[in-house]
Amino acid sequence: MRSSRQGAIPSDLGWLIDELDSFSDRLRTLEAPSGESLGNTVAKLQTLVSDIQSQLDAWAAGRRTDAQTDVVIDQKIAAYVAAVLAGNVAIGGALTVQGAVRMPTVRATDLSSASSRVTMWQAGPGDDRLGHT
Image 1 (cartoon, rainbow, N blue to C red):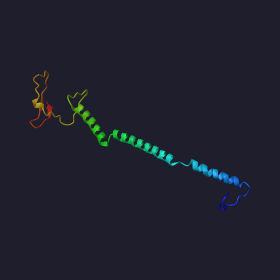
Image 2 (image 1 turned 90 degrees about the vertical axis):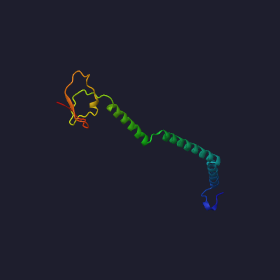
Image 3 (image 1 turned 135 degrees about the vertical axis):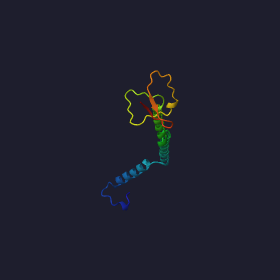
Image 4 (image 1 turned 90 degrees about the horizontal axis):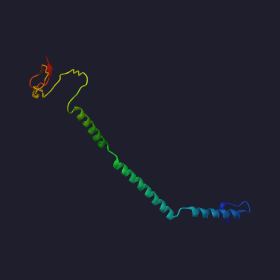
C-alpha cells in the first residue's frame, strides 16, 4: 500500500496505483544497464577511439610538412631555371639589349672556321663587353 508520505489515495483504486508503481519500479530496474552492459559499452568506445587515433596517425605520417613542401617547390624552380639557362640560347625574334652585352670567354673562342664574319670588338682583359664597328 501507499505510504503516508505520498498522500491519500482519492479513490478505491489505490491498490491499482500501488501495483502500477511497483511495475514501473521493476521495469526501470530491468531497463537499467548492467555492469556487463556498461563494460561492453566502454570496450566499444575504447575500440572506436583507438581506431580514430590510428587513422589520425596514418594521416599525419603521410602528410608532408611545410619544410618538405618548400624543398619540393625549390627543386622544381631550380630545375626550371637550370633548364632555361643551360645550353644554347635561341631567340626567334629581335633581341634588344639596353645594357652592355658581355661574353666572358670570347677571347678563347676560335672563329677561324666561321665563313661569314663581321668586324666586332671585345674590350680589353677584365672587360667582357662586346661591340661592332
